[in-house]
Length: 189
Image (tube, rainbow, N blue to C red; front, side, top):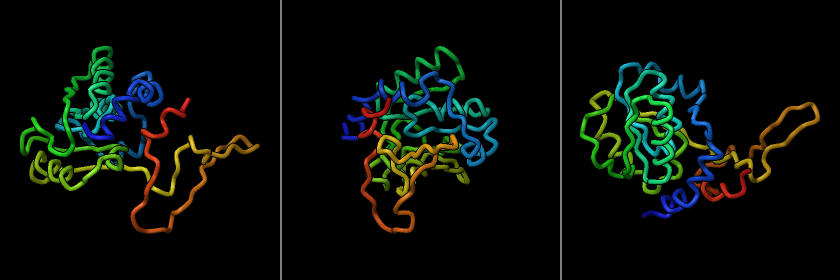
């Protein structure tokens, strides 16, 4: 088990309680715009966690297979699927090899807010390319390194009732070592 998988395993309950605890799924117009019209398409949600993005894809009309390395997060995803069935299949597996997913079997692949936490991207990108049909699409979203997590005090509340995020390192290029989501979760409410 990789360090990142171990970390998500250890924090699965806290993560689930913090990110989409009611199981409503992702509500993000930008995500919807990025994936486009997925009605009738077969889509894989890689590093799906407790299925937040997988549920959104299913709500948009896709046939979805969610894959994650954390059995505990998948257990949350499966429980939510039982409570509100959308026809999502959840599989335990590594993004590095997507074992069990056939070659040329998906119209699209999504990796929402997780690619930055997956070590060794080359095998992940190769496995994604392997499972995509010729001409298939891949959408990934990541945290920009100029943004720090709210747990680090980067959100500022103003007297006018607005909240703004402090931004740093926006124009710096190159590798960036950052505190990842799984390292800050214990500090979240």
